[in-house]
Length: 271
Ligand SMILES: [Zn+2]
Image (tube, rainbow, N blue to C red; front, side, top):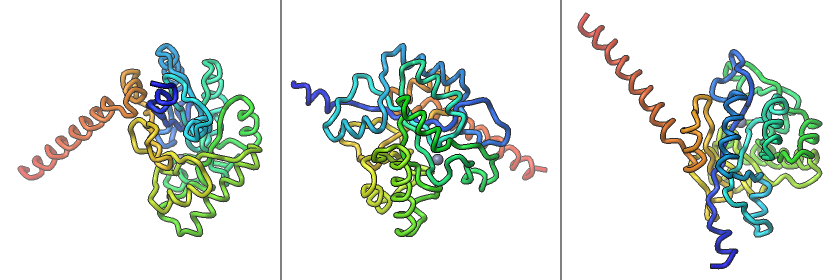
């Protein structure tokens, strides 16, 4: 077996985070992972011999221009919250890890209007200067569109504008081609993927599971780290690209709710 065959046999888990930081009242509850919890996760990765790579590095591997490291994991952060600079990046660098942040190029230095529009409290987003500064510190940046719409609901003209505009804006900031995209809300279709392929080398979805050399480059799988993930659930995400432990907990919680609802209904029925 030669080394190129070995190199094509990798399996890559991709984790999705949004925000690392203290709890903020009114903010969409699934997007925050506590700093202590994040540090424990990084320690777990380190003690189990994992090596991080960026989305840019992955695109180089897929083009045959770079080698996949052993025990790889790709950490991604969607939306580009400003307090990543305070909590996530210093913790990553302290562990010699890197990561890819997907930013909304039409909202840099502003707030997450897409969550605010559905009633959640707003959070500040990184500026172009902050992106430039952290790009020098091995943090990689990709596109998360211009304004964070559901791409599958746009006309082809709007879709072009969101993707080509964001690729151009990010390339100007980085001083190199922006190669990677994460679909806002994880939503994509054949049309979205084909427009994405005009401007990017890779695009990330929210479908779970590990990736290998045969995974669709415009539907790379990711698993989202949840605020309630313990290390057992986290380790499943890394090993399998999904957490059956977390899914089972969710299913049980829903089943409890359903049975409580049935009890209430039968009480009304008999009353
Ligand atoms: Zn997003």
